[in-house]
Length: 163
Image (cartoon, rainbow, N blue to C red):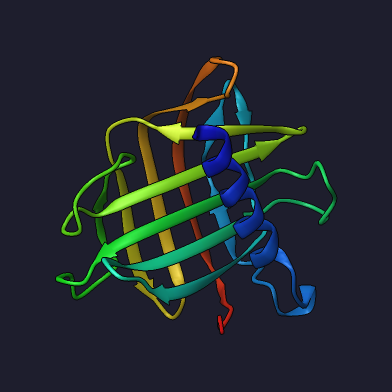
């Protein structure tokens, strides 16, 4: 099951990262570290989909050239329809329709890491600018390796319209 979910997130991230590089945002800052190595994205995109139970926001955050093993991160937010804003605390778990959920994956060096822990704070700063705060989180591989994952990513994302 985890492998299928991981594959789905990889596909979503790859689809969202395609597009015009000239239109991609270069206005990013990051203090994220995993196992002593930083993740320093320089652009990102996002899309919005109205799901059955949640509004879904899918973010693709990229570092460096768009090559197969370039570091990248996929962040999926599941926002309850009862919320007026995207800002709030999200839980990296399964939940009910009223529960704000997040799915986050980091891809580096041909490996995929599932980000999990307590909560992730998300702030919509307006004008397509978002901040993601990861505190006391962990990054785990399918092989069971787990590393500390902490820090903040903030940037202006290019919105991609979905059909």
